Image (cartoon, rainbow, N blue to C red; front, side, top):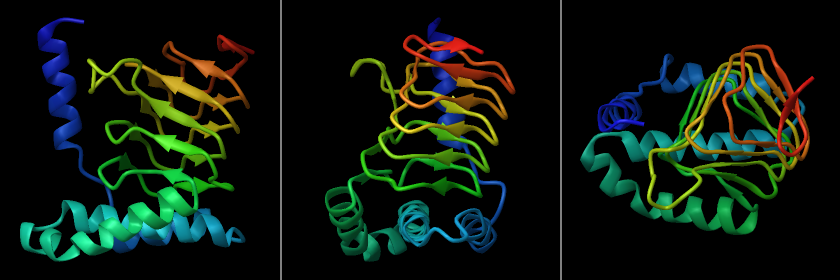
Length: 182
């Protein structure tokens, strides 16, 4: 990847904006997690911390105690690492959540489903922007690992315990280690 490509990717990450406002996003999340009270709690707390973290500086400074509490409760008690700076579209569904690890530089599209034990992140510490971009409507199975500077196409399905390190086409179903298309 050229230096220009890396800068373009970094700019895209830094300028990403949600399509919907806070209330509309939260409403879509609650509908996506209907009948899933734990998922509702996780996603609500994530959205609130994300909103406070990205808000005006004064709001951010006032919300630091909440963000610390979020990290302690959600990460340490519930075992869900979904940092407030992670870019996530509306309609996020989280099933179970335990062991979920998402790098704060990953981008997750709208109407995606994450299950327990999922890892989404970069391959090395030296490539901090080298995180996956997950498209809209992606369904990720339990224990799946998605690493590196890759794109998961809209509507793709990643099978349980799959390891994905290469781009995935739209509507594709990937399974295994390494991930292969069904």
